[in-house]
Image (cartoon, rainbow, N blue to C red; front, side, top):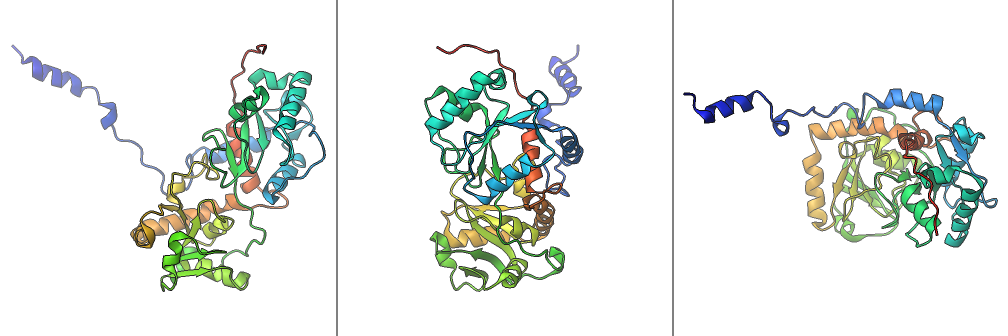
Length: 351
C-alpha cells in the first residue's frame, strides 16, 4: 500500500506554489514602470484624449510658472474640446487665492447647470492647485478633494496629497541649461556630491570643508553650474526645499540624492518612472556619515546604470513654451489619461 504522505507530496509537486514561482525581473534597461506599453499608450493618448474646461469664476492667473504654463498649454493645445460630450476628463479652473467658500459655490453652480459632475460625483474631474487643498466639511469640497484629481506642485504640503489619485507637476527651472557636451558615462567626477543651497541646513553643515563635496549658495554663472552637475556623481536635494534643479541633475548625469525623514508619496511621474532606479533616498537621522556611506555604496555598476536611466528619464522634466512629445506637459497629461476611466455613480439627492 502506497504511503499516503508520499502520495500527497507527489500530488502537490504537480502544482507549482505561487509564492515560489519565479517573478519576471524588472527591465533594468528602462526607467519606466511599463516599458512595453508606455510608448504605444502615449501615442494613443495624443490621438484621442480630450478635456473640457469649465468657464472659470473670473479672469485669473496662477501663482507659479509651472501651473500657468500647464494651464495655457492645455487651453491652446489639441487636447482641449468645446464639446463636453466627447471629453474624457473635465477641468475645474479656479485661481489660487480663491476662498474655499467661493470654490464650493463654483462647484455648486456648475453641478446644477451641467450633468457631468453628478455622473461621477467629480471622479472624472481635476483641478490645479499648487499648494493643494485640505479637508473641509462642505459637501462640494469633500467631493472635490476625495474624488477629483488634484494637480499640485512638487513637493506638496503635508496632508494635502492623496497617493494613487493626485499628481504633482515637476519643477520648472526658470533658466534651463544647454545640453551636456558629452555622455555622462564618458567623464570623470570630481565630487561625490553637490548641493546648491541658499542657507545651511541640518546635516549639510557637517559637509562643509569636506573635499568630496561641493556646497555653495549659487554658482557664479550658468557655465559653472553646468560644470558642477557634470563633475559630481550625486546632486543633493532636501525634500521640502528647493528641488527646481532635479530635472537638470538627471539630464547632466548627476544622480539625485533626496534627503528626507519619511517616504515620499508625491514624486512627479510616479505612474511612469521607477524612481528607485534613477535616484537615491537618504534619511537625515544618521548624519553626514550615513549620507556618505549610502552614496559610496551606490557607486559602481549600479551607479552607471542609474546615471544612464536618469538621462533617459530627464526628457519628461523639460518644460517647453510650445509643448513637445514626452516633455513635462505631455507626461502630466499622460498621467491624467491613465485616470480617465471612472465609475459612473448613480445620481442621488442630498438633504
